[in-house]
Structures are given as C-alpha cells and as structure tokens.
Length: 216
Image (cartoon, rainbow, N blue to C red; front, side, top):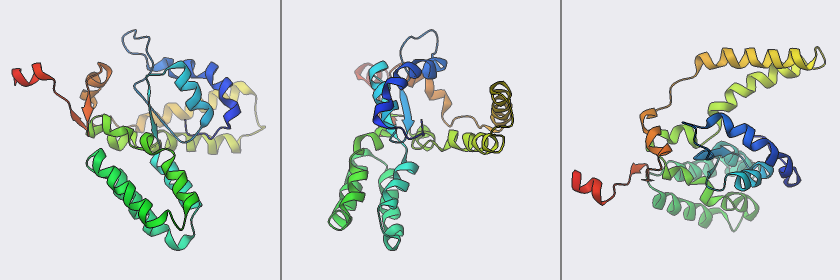
C-alpha cells in the first residue's frame, strides 16, 4: 500500500486489489476490508474505491509528514512536525480538526504548497478516529508492515540478477516467514470482532445504541 503509483496505474490495481485483500476475508464474508492504510498511491486508492467502495481510507501519517516537510525549508521542520504531532495525537476528531486549523493559520500564507499537501487528505488522515482507540497506534501509519518490507527490499536489491524468479520468490517467502516470528499481537485485538460486525466507534470509543444503554 505504501508504494507510490501514478494515476494511470489504477487499471492494473483494479485487477490486483481483489487478490490483495482476498486473504483478509473472515468467516466467508465476501465484503472487502474495513480499513485500508497507505500513502498517496492514487492507482491503489481508485481501484480500492471501485472494488470495495465501503472500505475506509486512512492515509499514513509518516508518509504524509515526510511529504509535507519535503516542501518546507529545514528551518521550520521542527515547528511543523510539532504542529502535525498535535493533530494525530489529539484525543478526539474535533480536537484534531482544531489542531489542523491552527497549523494552517500559522503556515499556509508562507508555505501554501506544503499546506496543500496536508489539506488534500484531511479527512483520510483522521479516519482512524472511527476505530477503537487501542488500534490507533497500528492504523495511523504503515510502519507495522514497512519494517518487514524494508528487509525484503534490501535483500532483494542485493540479490538482483543473481537468480531466477523462482529462487527470488523463495527467498522473499523465507524472509517474510522469519519476520513474522517477531510480530506482536494487535493491541485491543478482542475488539476486532466488533469492528468486523460493524459496531460503530466515535473518537475511539464504542457508540452504544438505545438498547445497549437500557441494558446497562
């Protein structure tokens, strides 16, 4: 998900996306995943919207921060990073929007291109607020999978042109097999059942309907 793609690549993603997310089906559910996390890979997002229109889009905060800082002079990097931190660490979506507005007031006049990079994905950057707070650390960025892929990319580059397609696939498989031994269990994993069953969350907290309140 974190691989940048050009807009014209989306037809290829349409064919690839069902195979990509097919592994995440639960209990024979034919619907797509509840959430997809990635950077601004336009081909992927357009294909995902076409194949699975109900899937929520979450932009990666690490990629977005890097893209915003790349459009700014180094002299303001620390200030902007601190301001961005206030957005994604806010306890509620409303507080995050207020922090969003503050960063625009401070920097948009002087650095419009950088702020445009930030604002174009405003809602997608805050999608995580509709999921359990315990999951936020996992779904705000693509870091959980990026660390695994970085090892695979490094070894693949070193082994380039040193073997057949089959040997390369075997190497990648063994690398991923070894990496999974270090994976940690998702925080709040017991809440996944609620997410899969379409239970609503607001600002990381389960939304109780009237029957739930009466039972309580």
